[in-house]
Length: 514
Image (cartoon, rainbow, N blue to C red):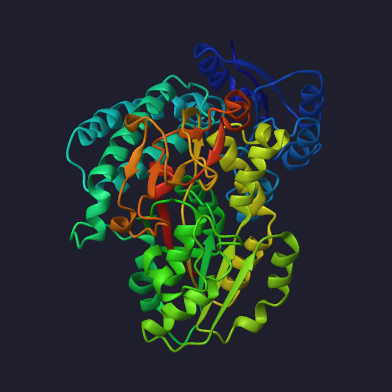
């Protein structure tokens, strides 16, 4: 299909060679000599792009541009002018031109401009697919090697990068190949965790940075007289951070961006308590017997994070003034924004923001949210939309205004589950879909990652015979009773607690205000 070009310029006699050149390239060109007619032509016809001379008799190019944009806001308009005055360029750019060309225009400039504005998505799609084909082979070779924990983090970064690159492309031909490679990577990653995870709690020098080491090893060394802000966004996946980063980067420079490891179970009860305590769950239970609750205990299991943080600070000799705030609703977020000035004298300000976790739960329970976040790309988009209108963005802006430093991290990620796995347990068995703990659990050994001795990976157990079993990749537990009902209810929801790259590999970012 020919692209239709409208070209408005009062020096029409000089444009004949350009028109012949474009027509030879397959473009259809309508040539006129004033801005008023350009506006009328745009009212009566559908053009793919408009070339508009800035200086014409009658209404100017800038006036014509404004009127054309009223008629067809999405129509790309290219301003062409003899002048290089900065004010004219600024006016044109402010009016949302697609491009800006200086006379005399040569044919190569025209073709480049047309390809950039008309074929951009197609060319980007072709180039992205071509680049991924090359990366596919390199990733395949990596996956066939013996990767260590840090190399697995790099693989995850690459897969997330390509996932985001493919988002919105016209040609999704390579998407299925990427999805297959992600599945292969997740399968191999789960095997890696099963083979190495226990060793990380037994002094293995190859153990990665894990969530219970982050405050001591990475956050406390940043403490100074100036305020440091630790923002823990619950349930924040690495890919979600990547879509938030461009907005945050308007106010901050990214000093460091890493992937670190959560702990098993990748659930708030364990991972976030471990983050603030700087201890694995068995050590928390011993040091804070009044504040740690096991699975079968009644009550909220993340009610004492400030107590754990205080103990961590004292244990590491950090005698600083600090604050802790947990935001679980819009009003609490607005209140924190209003009171932000009161935290300027603290050396450490901790903010736990719970929205992303609540979003994943709402998606499970509400059909409307499930439709809005139908897949990972839509889930990221919804997270971005929330952030753009949230008090959390206002908090980032206020920190930036004060020239502050920020650490952004999370306690665990989440994974979209699609494959039900049967399990049987007694009444004391916990309800999480990605891990189960207790005694008398009945399951197929090959379908789960079983930990018979939880204490070896830092997990307390209720009885001598208690064990932990974890789901891998996109699997989730379902009881045989009322099986079909629960499969229908939970399938294709975002869950956490098990073993997958999206749950275990979490962002750790250091930001400095610009």
